[in-house]
Image 1 (cartoon, rainbow, N blue to C red):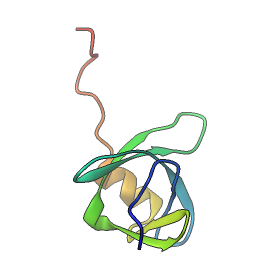
Image 2: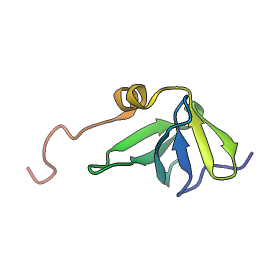
Image 3: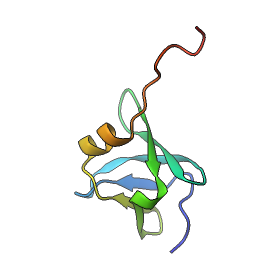
Image 4: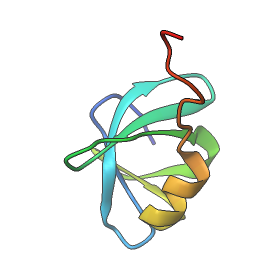
Length: 79
């Protein structure tokens, strides 16, 4: 299977779209969620499997993925 790339859709264990790959790094994928207020998820690469040419799947539900891989800022970057 091919390597993950920016623009790939990421779906949860139920096949629902979580978001799109925004950037690919050596050990994780930066996934931008869908919605009015998008959130960045830092998904470990071993947790992702390719299911077709443009989609990747994780073994968690959307809510579980948010809990596991969302890393909010601890403080404002300008402080």
